[in-house]
Image (cartoon, rainbow over the protein chains, first blue to last red):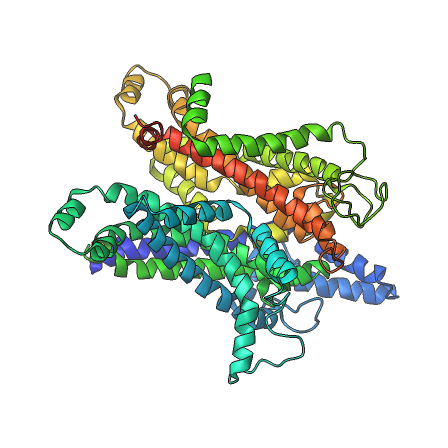
Length: 337
Length: 285
């Protein structure tokens, strides 16, 4: 147990903290390297919007914004103040929906993203791996080969294009799915009514399908190449000679061994999948973090974009950390170190 | 080199398909130099015409011929992809070779940084960055930014190659002959990792073009430059689907898909060719 903590747990915790530290530091440095001063940009935009302001109130606004962006004091003080505000969970108010805090708006949008993202990742992981293993175990199967081609084709194409193709085909040319949103405009979310849940699922179908389709091909191809060497291993041949059922060999002998690198890969692609979910939401007008981001871009809501970036980094880092903590459950070598 | 090409053409169907698809894309790039229309001008042709013999992909609501406009878009997107790939290749080769050869704490620090870049959600960071640089954003700047962010995974790949090269006897011979570490890395190890560098270049081009599409759709790139992403941005801005101008969305999406599929097939085909185990299966040796 001691060895496990020293060899496995502590390096993972250090990795987790490094990830957050580097990510947050990058988001701290970026605005300060940019040639445009966010405060001046904001002030000049407010003036350009036609608000007639006397010089004194412009000056007080400038001071307020400088404080808001954490731009007072020297860079080192600013950096510590930045972390201080992060620990308090205070990311400032949204500039566009003043004075609603950024954290609150992200908190409202996040469940929509997660309710879509988590099932989609789990489904594509399970089915991609299962069919990938099947395809290398039954190399002559026509249907599986077709599935491999489809998976490879979709996998190579960016999320945005897959989403827009699904949208054009299934809600424009063949209108069987709704065009946008998480539920029809004007309805109130009511989780006790079956009707509402059904329309919710109907609206989530195409967005989820995008994420599942793009993910599926990657797991399929990965699992196939991992298992292609395992199927000719001695212990598999032995199990076959011993007359074990094919399903049992596939799941307990072949997939069990190959699934571990796939778990590691899952932790590595979480950031990419999350980014994909953001852009997919923009296509489908799904009211999650992605839609929040595009609205912030249109409205020049700097603090919101900053908040989304920070929350994304912490969120993805934490998800990866949780996966690292779960990994010993699947890998006995780590467990019994 | 020619023999490799011939082998690939003969034995690998994916490679043949990739050549056909990329040939079509290359033809579009070449045609852009002979375009009858200036992509910067709008309302040079009647607007909202569906695809016809005269206007192959139809015309946009801004009065542009979509086919000729897309020839510029493909050219610019490829340019972006290649510049990004060159920048990020330089970084990943440097980091990978150094980390792999030096080992020790340099290796640990470099790999900690590169692992961080692998795991970080890049899109939000790139959104923040391009949001702040919006006024000075052009194709070259975007390529540089993407190049600075897109090296991490391949650096790790190159490092793992060098780790095994370091244990080979020729490295030891070189060290005992007094060859400097720098020279060993450049002269002895680099040639071994070049095939991988080439394969990952294709993958990196794919990644950066996809990122450009994403950022442009969000309105965060230089929207006056025709690229595959800005094509989709303007189509969305004019509500192309709602207005029934479906070809405005479909054409760039299809062209992007063809480009991606072509590059991806080329990547997997070359990747399997590099690996001797899969190559034998491929050519039936």
